[in-house]
Length: 340
Image 1 (cartoon, rainbow, N blue to C red):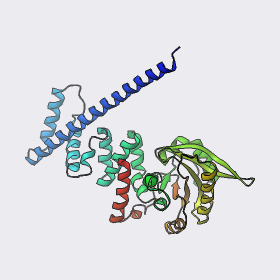
Image 2: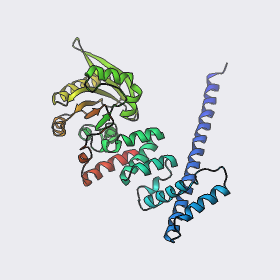
Image 3: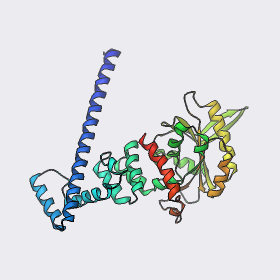
Image 4: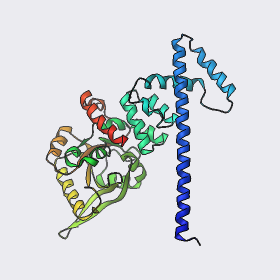
């Protein structure tokens, strides 16, 4: 039987092997992306020489003949390389990011996102949170970029500088619960049960770093018991997250109830090394002005979001995006945090 010191020794060697494998894969990916970048540049220059589109088909055929068994040299992929180079090379924010994620994920972002800042957001998010291709597609289809930019929280005023930007990234403006298979008309209890039964989908929709602690989480005070709909923990924030579910429109009194829960969590549940608890009120709908005025008077961190049980977003959703100046300021904060 191995001694503890021997077990530790073997574990350390295993970690070194894993780290070396990761670094090797990372180096291969960077080399491949750099190759595709240079090919894209050369094709772009060939088009400037007025050689016509036929040169790309000829190049594809020649490369596949010269390097049999090496994928990636189809005519379609060569044109994508040119598009990749042409659209990223003049952008000072995108160009440094070309080696950060795999080619297949770049292609997804290139094809589905036209806004350069949106592309930057998804590249950095994919890198930071380790999104797979399917998760990346899911995030883009669910308008994650827009949902973070228009979310309604008071985190800037209520959380310390070291975590407030990360906290803003933890709350979307709207959540899509299309995986629940629930009737359009449902009770709060039915919604809660379905979310717990489909906890993997729920945590995926919430975003990275959330862990599930329990539902109807009991907190007692003065010989009375109170129950929080859902209690989560955010690993990166090191914060408890209380979630209240409402099947109707947001009402100002919901904020007071959440503040009560957060005070209880901070006093009776939070561990000494953890940050303040955060609250998320998820409603079927909300008046953004009412939410804004409700959160103004709170000194505890609360976000208010809506949910939908279908993939279809409201028709006026795009109109809610901030103006260019506001978008730029919010986006800069997100990107700064994603790069940390």
